[in-house]
Amino acid sequence: MTVTSSPTAVARAPQPNAELWPDLAMVPSGPRARASAAVAGKIVTAACRRLEIQLVSAETAVLPDVAAIVVHDQDEFLRRIGADGLIGFGEAYLTGAWDSPDIALLVTKLATSVDRLVPQWMQRLRRVHVRREPSRHQNTVTQSRSNISHHYDLSNDLFALFLDPTLSYSSALFDTDLVAAGDHRVAVAPAPVSAHTSELFREAQQRKIDRLLDEAGVTEGARVLEIGTGWGELALRAAARGATVRTVTLSQEQLELARERVAAAGYGDRVSIELLDYRLIEGEYDAVVSVEMIEAVGDEYWSEYFRKIDDLLVPGGRFALQAITMPHQRMLDTRDDFTWIKKYIFPGGLLPSVEAIEEITRRETGLRVTDRLSFGQHYAETLRLWDETFRANLDQVRALGFDPTFLRMWHFYLAYCQGGFAAGYTDVQQMTFVKEIR
Image (cartoon, rainbow, N blue to C red; front, top):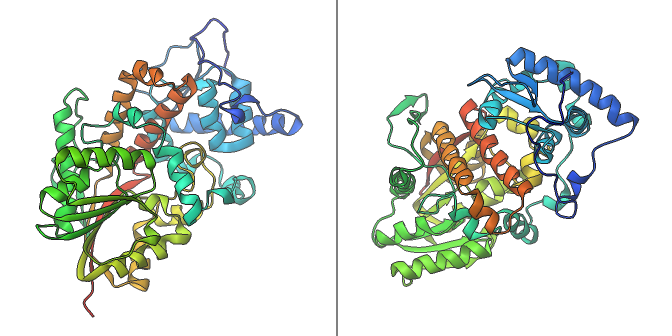
């Protein structure tokens, strides 16, 4: 790979603070790093040519509406990729070694062709060169809270700067048609929504919640358990239906704000919020609801998660699950991999497949799927809105004390995920289960 670079070209991002970002402070060096960088250069050049991605230097004009990688420091860019694959690719973005006018468009292009990014012979050797998730990220009862805190306890004020007014941190469901697709339904992709039209986004988030509550059969007098409180919007809407809600979280920051919101709404007598691991819950419930929490469970605990829900539900009770998913074979191939997202955003996270969920619940529980809705393109739009709003509020994020590297990391995270959903690499499901009456 050869791109010419000019020191007077478009300004490179500020270098990361070595104390805050130690893994970014040193560029891989030595003979092995040079050799790996040479191989990475050939792979990157071939992949960009094959996928029609512009690979240019900072002083080169980028074509509009075309995926592009703008390289500021070719040597660092290739050394990081050569040393650590896709983690290195993301880290090279954090240091400013490369940039792109549209990260989401670039990732969409890459994710659409993920099976063709590297030669087949290298894919067969992936177990040799792909890093494994550290054991310290395992989601034990004691470690899960630390994993959750890494992300969700950053700052309630930070999340408020890019989420909609309901503070919902999961995919919205916009008002589109639902079409049949085999054994489930798919929500048609929504038209782009303006971030300035916050009411439409709020309605889409409430539609998502209300559909889950409907699927769970939550009505007046229902005893509802929510696993994963977020900032309390689902609990508030369930309480407004006359239900009694118990909701658990492992985030101290979310707990405190959710309690404030419940008290302000006057539902303190109907909603209880606890800092508690799902494995320690006791009781009996008519309905269980969980929104995008299973991604933090870990595959070694999926069976325990579903068995616990089965034990907590009354016969005939209903469980409504919203889960980010990935294709089954891809999940099997990558479940032990250490990724940029796991390192910087969600330690211990793993996306399940629909097949894994259905197989475990069928084999180990009395929970039976009665409905499934897929709406991955709605998540792509949700993430686009979050990212657009986040970038519009950068001055306020800085005022909270977050440094330039964090700003790049958060934008990359949101845009990276948007591209994954836009490409169909990831999906999101609402799945309804009923506990068999035996």
